[in-house]
Image (tube, rainbow, N blue to C red; front, top):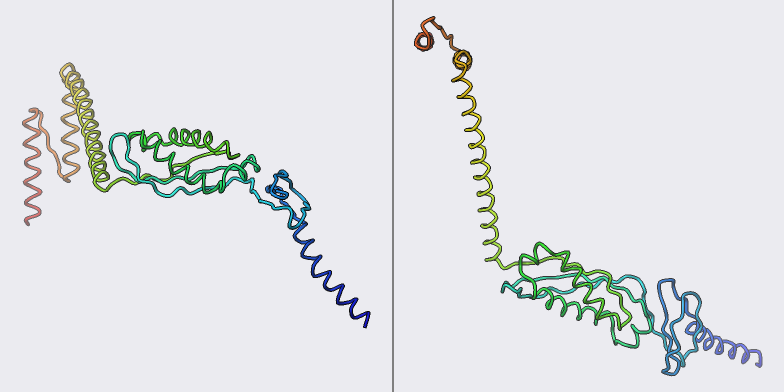
Length: 263
């Protein structure tokens, strides 16, 4: 009977001791820290490795030191030139002071998210639409610097802020599309006019050269007739009489071609 009570007592002790040991022994990973409070008083941040705390006396808060991303919800922003746009962004931050992140703000992740929304509206509201579309990198750096300065008392280091997308009103999108199309037409006309100008200069130089060298003009005429005859499958007959003779030869060749086709 005594042995039975001994076994029961051992089982009861094990049932009490094992949970206590499990709650007293903590394994903290390399990228984590435990902020320990003993009877409400701050003891400090401990870890990584094997950590022993006193159950029911010590309370702990686990802090992740890795880079964390915050997806800022879409925000309605009115730019400085009175254009309403919808903007969303991503904030990258990490905890550099676990004690400050636990003791100086109730929920640092939620606080960073709300702070990002406020700063995003304030900064982008001071920028014009063209800056928002073309100078996004500068705005990202400015947002990052402001958020980093404001979150530093919480033990938070904001490493980067990235504006993901800028949604414009439908009317503004159509207006910008028309503007882009008009710009493309303008460039095409400028290029066409420049080409005509260059071609006219080249033709002027060629005319001057033919005027100074009549033999070259004569050779060019013959070459043109040969090309016409070759393209139309005709035979060009030239006479020594000059241009009239060549034209008569072309006319005869055309008539013979029509007769053969008609026959």
